[in-house]
Image (cartoon, rainbow, N blue to C red; front, side, top):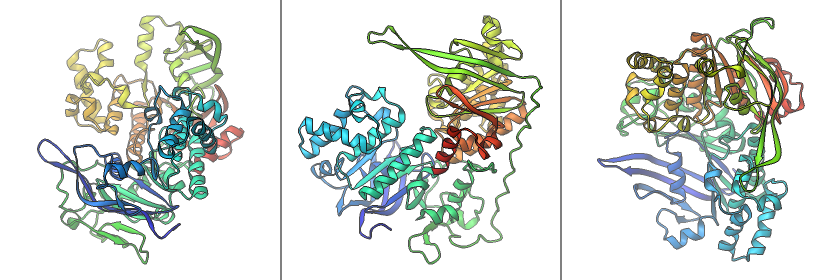
Length: 609
């Protein structure tokens, strides 16, 4: 461990939210320490209490939150009970936070350099000119090329990776001892993520900054953390050294998370954790994970387990009645996961479902006054590929490589400059209104963000039945089909009456998948379908997509930057960079023996992260 004296000490922290009728417990008796120069990762599913834990540490909890017990001490100061003046001197100066979504956190109306300089002026009393010079140096220190230009830019003019580095530069401007990071790599492509993780590791080693990293991405946490804490339903289930825990996790929940992760190095079976987080269940009765645990016995339902030391280690703890020992013979054992059967690629001379030949798409940049400028951006250039029936083709590459533009053009949501797109032997861009409507019944899309792709003013019934109603299907028939489709994707038929905001992230994505499959399409375009999901929910969705593909005998076009997901789902892969395809072939061959330097760079970055 990098140091002995704790910089941050959380002891017995219990937090609840006050509701109309009763309090809802969110954290229960959570405790851990972070020493100087150490990186601690906290992982868990959405709803496990990770964000509440972070905001407790920063004392940013809303008025409805109630601290029922415990303390959060930073360098001896209890942050939960410190006066406002003391907190102002700690936040941003001694403890700095990097938020999940930099686009939402950065002020869109203020230039990047001024946002960094503001921290220097507030905490150190520097002049604006001195603070701006320091801002340039901070941007350079986080790996920003041309820092003076970036400092003079507005946030919307930067890429996602640049915005996240700017957020880190703002955090570092106060020269903190502790960096708190909330999902810093979410939605970043594999190369940007690898570079960001390299930067965080370098900061930890070079500046001896303590890091508290909260994420549902076990790969990102493993790349940085010295120790890992696993949070579930507000309770710390396992806490211990990162390398040993990931090699042989003790707690059943940790093992479940590990079993749900697809691997980039090999196609291995994955298994999601059945069920979901407990809702309204008495927390004093038994283990919070008992209802989803394959090893659960009667004792697990009746007696709450305590954190127990594993073996001889005083640093490794697990909350389980069977901690450090094999489960008894009476315990239920998990069935071995069945490997996903992927469709064998058809022969090259077989009939193509979709054929794209020399496709090029251009964008024209808007000028200063809103008129189109002369500058033309070549988003897609001379892209060609063939998708055969019952085949899964993945298109991978960095953000901005042209992947989504290709998908939108195939659906005629984007105009092309040149090339041919044919579906079933017919030119898609020659379709009239009626033919285009029939085409879009046969080609459906599942979007990256289910929250933004589902109309919040429509019920699930309206959302799932809409494709059928647009095709002229009677309302009662459409509703019956929607109810069957929801059951097929693992949702109860009663879900039809719910609104999107009443669903979890995984439930929303299942609704989006049900809507896509309701018309029995021949081709489903999957645009980053699991990017925003927890690892266990992601595994469940991938299992669902594999089953639906086999049942409906359809084809997939997967747009993704997650190479592990691609290896698990796809039969073949096309690697895109700067609007062009650099490499195309069987997924096992491309991943095992990449020929193009860019493909090798993607795979190397995926393995590092």
